[in-house]
Amino acid sequence: MFIGVNSSHFLPRHQPISPTFVPSSSSSIIVYNKIPVRLSQRLHLLSLLRSGQFLDMDTSAGPSLFPLHRCKTLHLVRHAQGIHNVDGDKNYKAYMSPEYFDAQITPLGWQQVDNLRKHVHESGLVKRIDLVIASPLLRTLQTAVGVFGGEGYTDRMDVVPLMVANAGNSGRAAISSLNCPPIVAVELCREHLGVHPCDKRRNISDYQFLFPAVDFSLIESDEDTWWKADIRETKEELAARGLKFLNWLWTREEKEIAIVTHSGFLFHTLSTFGNDCHPLVKKEICKHFANCELRSMVIVDRNMIGFDPSTTNYPGRIPSGLDLPSDVVDAKDEERT
Image 1 (cartoon, rainbow, N blue to C red):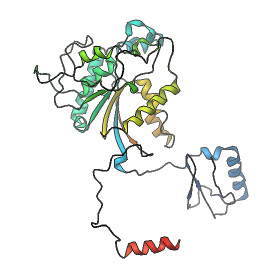
Image 2: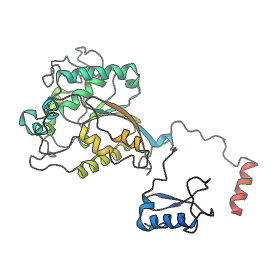
Image 3: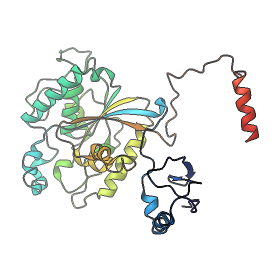
Image 4: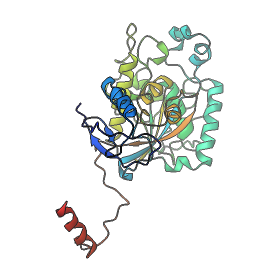
């Protein structure tokens, strides 16, 4: 990476500033010119430049502006308490137990689902959500349909339920698919893969029986070909999968999306963000999720991955043309410079 810097003049913090930005391949470095300071300050900053520490200084913190149509609102949800969490939170080795294969949520977990459902309805959030994405495991599917599904199920031939009665030994009544956002299962947002039986999914055909109105069409294989009994996905691989998932979101036209997923997936994915923010904001982004916790965040398309046009922008003057006389003056100024 090549950085152009005028090393003859640097600015101490207490003086007024007039920054110029020097773009590089991965960042923008603020360079301050034509303001004399003491020689000791210059030498100190030059030593930081030579050591590389100056490049690590965060100069981009502060308010940022982005076009609205290049943003999506994500409502991130960790699944409710699963049967594996009860023992696993006490002893991590419990996650190795085969009895927790594709763990379902506990009775306490269903209470957490009911509490979150009440919140999303009272806040009006459920009416704003265009799409719900769920990891294809039993506990995330149960959480997704329990929180975002329709009100009381009616046994109508023309309405397929989101969840059949007692799915996953839940003891719960069937959940309706009426008047709720579509729910889609996506493999990319699964939990940390491998070794732990609780993170191995069952066949998609089994889920389709339990959750008839959930869309499983994006999952290619009926059997779980991702989970390996003897190979644990690395944290780096998990984070890369999370970024791939977020990039995939830009191929969707929906602007407000709820994602029901897992603690490890959320933590390692979100930990790659927030390095250009205040440390407290970074902490707010990356901290671990509690069971059935919901956090709303905005994701910004900096690289023009998405192609959706704005639905709110308006071109102004029609027909187009120069707004005389100010545009003429501005054009002449640009020519002169």
